[in-house]
Length: 163
Image (cartoon, rainbow, N blue to C red; front, side):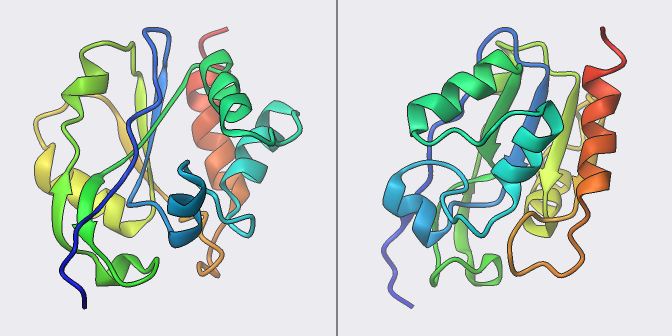
């Protein structure tokens, strides 16, 4: 493994964000386009936009506008690491996100953890948080157990209960 640390992306959020979705670390394709869930095979944007009945935005700026409009914060648990390709299993020397950067400035009511590594790092570092959180099935194309209904139910708990 080459020992050069790769860096993830800044969080996307504002004061109106109600839900925080935390992935693990950007894939090779995401790093290439410099934004979250850049692999078109990843189910993230299809799932999230489908929930709201919207088409998937094309550009990074349109995706950010969608997230702001829908009060969704997006970040990764790993802000920098050594990694082989895109596999979470190869993450080494991870720097964990300081979630206070988002939580101190947004009205987060629930945290959704996209996959096992995200969940593991969150539970290892943030046991003191009182915000409800939930491990979600990874939206990665490599996950055969992905279930969109689980995501939509979790989104309902935040967005449908507060209308």
